[in-house]
Structure formats: structure tokens, C-alpha cells
Length: 508
Image 1: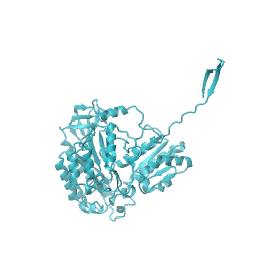
Image 2: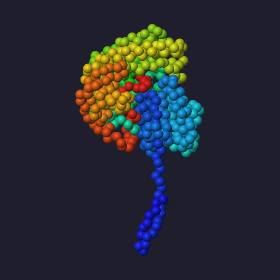
Image 3: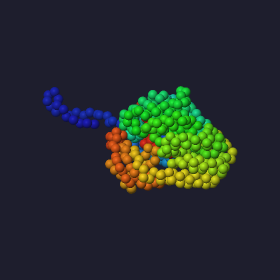
């Protein structure tokens, strides 16, 4: 209520009061993401949808009115991780009845009503195909005061048309396709994400150009099997054409992609990588196993010789390319001879790093029903042998970088000990992580450094030779201290800075 005094018709003071409605405080949200880049990409859209609906993101550590779990179903511990985190929120929600919890993503698509049975305090469960329904489902659950479970079996709308909140002003994901046409026996993703759906090239390039206009200088093309792009509209060279089309875009300094499938990896893609200056000399190509017998059991439609042939041709075209991979240990039926074949490929390919996984039985996949499941102790022992070899080779390959002058794009949040060591971090063109002596540079800027030390998983540069301030750095600086940006309706993903490699494979 506001009290004020005005002058009446006779010039006498008149006291008046009026009621002014208080503006409601925006409900807040938090999105917690598990899994691969595809999940991170979807979380960017979930954030954009919520902000478009009037929600405000909370600062780290603060309690949110709405907590959204965007889940993964690739590995066995995904279930336990989700239900453990939900359990931690049960008492928080009990003390705050207006709080809402939503669960989406691959695990939600798979488990459906099981989630509300195990965690009856969850308000919304939604799938991978209807993430755009989240704001409506939250409101419906709030009004009805009961859980809303909505899982659809096919894509309602291509996710890139949804609002998206981008946190990184200098690097961004760009989705070229969703879904997967492969039938790998260990992978549940095709059953959850559906058949491959491709965007038209013009839409992708328009999104990239819009991103670059906003200051982005690095993009990562994203797909479940990114190099199969074009299968839906019948162009087998569509992906290499897309890479080449990125070349003339002024201001686009770095183009990456993940994850390609060896079965669809063709020479026109290698040529496009080598001949397009802003396509980076880095390749993440899942191996999964080096044994032809295990690859056959996995329904991976390539064999060891084809995989190594691709590596050989990539290195012939781009001698400095860094190649990384995913490997599964302990697939059903894997013998010591099969495992040795994987070690042989690791030695021959000389990966700069590898994401290594112990086989995880996933209900609903053909591999879960295969005989000859390997004893956990055997799997664990093989896993440690693989990790030791991967680290040994990665260290040797990194030591070859010492003394080289490389350009780094300064990154944000990749150097956990940067504050203690008085260093900053950045990624080289080949995607190697480099910690360098702190200088006056911003995320998105480019620094030229001399590599002075090599560890298995990173490099160190104690000499900084040059700093180039960029539009991307300007965009990062402009973002600081400003309110969170509104969602953008071009499907431009933005939850965090796109990591050059996944925390978990994109099932390539």
C-alpha cells in the first residue's frame, strides 16, 4: 500500500491511499545433466524453454523451485545415480511443498512410470521426443497436484526449433541430426532416440551464421552418428559438403564434429577435413573393440582392418591430427585373444586419449541376453591393463608436442587447478588441453604458446608468445555481470562450453 497527499479542487490537502499489486517473483529452475553431448545439447533447450516460460535460473548452490534431471541410460549406474539424487531431494521437497521435480532424457524414456513408483514425489516425467512439453507439464502437475507422465514414441518437433539458452558466447553445439539407424547390441539409445532425422543443410548453416554473428567462433557439429548425415534425404556426401560449406563463413575459426561411425566414414570426409582450413585436425572415432569377432557380436558393421585403414588415411592427409576413441572392455564372450586384439589396435592407432568403459549390461539390449557374460574381476583386470596402455601412449604422443608453438582458444572452466597454479587453460587446434601461464586474455581469445611440459592428459605452456583479442572474447566479456540471456528460437544449444570430447560416448 502506498500513502500520498494530493491537492483537492479547493486547494486543500487530501490524503489518499492506493493498493498496488506486488509483482510476483519468477519461479527458479535448475537443470542437472548426465551423459553425452546430446544430453547437454538437450539441456540447453530445456533451459531455454523454461526461461521462455518465465522461469529464472538459480545460482549454483541455491535451492530452485524446479529441478530438472536430464538423464542418460547408456551405463548401468545411471539408474542408481538418478534415484540417489532424487532421494537427496525428497526431504528438501517435503520442507518446500511448492517445489517441483522433473525427470527427462533417455532413462525417463526407458523407465517411464517406474520413476514415479520409486520416487512418488516426482512431479513430471517426459521423454526424449517431447522435451518441448516440459513447461506445460509442470503447470499441469502444479494445478492437478499429481504427477504428469508423458512419453511419446516419435519426435514431435525437431529440437533445434525450440528456444535455447547458451552459456558460452564463444563455443556452441549445432545439431545436424537426431536418432540413430544402427543396431549395436550393447546400446539402448536407438530404441530411445528413434530413427535418424536430418536437418536440411540450409537450416544448419543459418544457425551457424547466426551464432557467429553473436560472437561464437567455434562450433561442434553434433549427431548420434554425425557422418551418416544426409541418409534421410539421400545424399551420401552431405556431411563432407556441410564441412566444406562451413569454410567460407567469416568469423568461424574452428569447426569440430562428434561422433562419427567408422562404417560410414568415407574419404570425401577426410578430404573435406584436410582442405577446409577452419575444420580442426581432431577426430573422435569410437572403436569399441579391436576384435573382429567381438565387433560382429556388437553388430558394428566394420572390422579392425577398415578402422585402421581410416586412421592411416586421416594421418596421411593430416599428419598432426589427434585421434581419440571409445573402447568397451568385457563385452560378453570376449576372450583374452579378443582383448589382445583391442590392445593391438590401441598400439597401432596411437590415440591421443581414449574413453574406456567396462561393459555394462543394459536391460532391453540384445547384449544383455548373450551367453558368456564375463566375470567382473576379469573385466576389471583387463580394464586396468587397457587404461595403463592408453595412458602410456597418450603420454608419449603428448611428449612429441614439447617445443611446438601452438594456438589455443582460451577456455572457461577446464582448468580445475588454474587458480592454484596461476595458469589459464585452452584447447589447441587438435583439441589437446593446455594449461598456460596466466596473461590478460579472456575465454574466446586466442593465445600463441610454446609447449614446455607433457603429461598423459594435458600439456603445459610456460611461454606465452602472443595474445589475440577476438570478437568471441568481446562477447564473453559483454556477458559478464549481465542478466541471463533470453532463449533463442533457432535451436542453438548452450549449456556450458562444448567439451571437445564427451563424458560418455554419443554411442557412435
